[in-house]
Image (cartoon, rainbow, N blue to C red; front, side, top):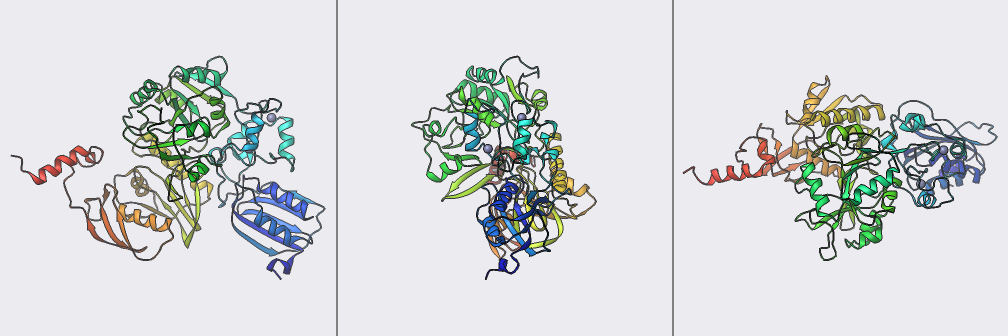
Length: 568
Ligand SMILES: [Zn+2]
Ligand SMILES: [Zn+2]
């Protein structure tokens, strides 16, 4: 006899994991009808709560465990007997208010069902740039505060038309409680702006297509921010982008109109293909094939690897209806600062870079870059935690009794929050050190506190006192703890692979502030979760100009020459 059978007539179930904003409640509803269960399902700050009464509770629970929606992830399911109650049916209840520690739902790429609908001239969402359903569309990027309900997202400004409302309220519809649901009658609208922010008359997509065909650069508002886009086959267009953006040689990602098109430029293996075409569609770094490659050589100069991806929003897809060449699609930002999310930022700071802006009025609340992955030995190696993967929650081996906020370093900033048995990693934020970037960093901290309803009691920061993240920690009136940069890298690696034994760690990561006040680099440590011993390191040398030498390696070269030769 299974555990469930002991109390098979009335149970209360709490499901934790990614169970909000992924069609979980309608799924529970359908299973309840199937097994003639009465009661209710509800989103709460603790997770999804289900009260189930009926003879087939055991089968119902089994179905919940086995058939949950593709976007969902069940971390735990607590089941306990409850008082029997006389419900006449099964209902989906309004979310109970209160801030939550539940996993935040993640943004996902346009699903196949929505794709079919937007291609169908008879469908009321034919060519609709904001089509979505419970399986796809924006999530984290539009959430102001959990639990995930339309009134707490940027979709609250759009009143549903009667047809959308009917779908939203129909438990058999695939848009039942799809919070960002909308249609051409009631949803967000596209606009096309020139680089001074003036709206241009005409079909916005046609205007964007025209500019791209002329070799111009546009900014396009995607899920988590703006992309800068131009013809990836044109040296002139790519050179213009590099020149205007002051980005000499750092590789640019390329978006292809279809898998067929992508495969004529790069050759990919089956694992890479499954990620390129999957439900997230991150940027995947693959081998560039020089023989078949007709992309501009300025995309990734002197590098045999290329970041590729497919259109993941209906808007990107519409663009490729009329364009038969691949497009550069790089985050709209200044150097490696956080991605921009408002057209006013583009006009204010990138007007010299773009010729036009494909904009819309669905506000991005939380910025989110594209995730970047590569496949090594059939395993995903995460290079940039972003759209579709972040915020990422994972279970801690040792639950923490304090809420701990780790603030990261200075470049490629990200934060992590430890609460009870979970650790939540933020998306990639970007390099700190500018007013905009530091402001965005602080907003992310506030967002995390709000999302997970905690006030961290311990702040963990890099030892370098001049990092913006350390400065932030030191100005807060909270307990704080500085941690050596390379040791932190080794600990992060241990956490990723679930290790807590003593390890021999190699951290060759440029410079980091050492415990002796000098800058360390190239460290070999014997470390565990409590302490480390520095058993080897590169020979110290002078950094001419201090931190400046880190960005200008020729200064280091000169310094090493001074070490070997005298000035004579
Ligand atoms: Zn969909
Ligand atoms: Zn509508």
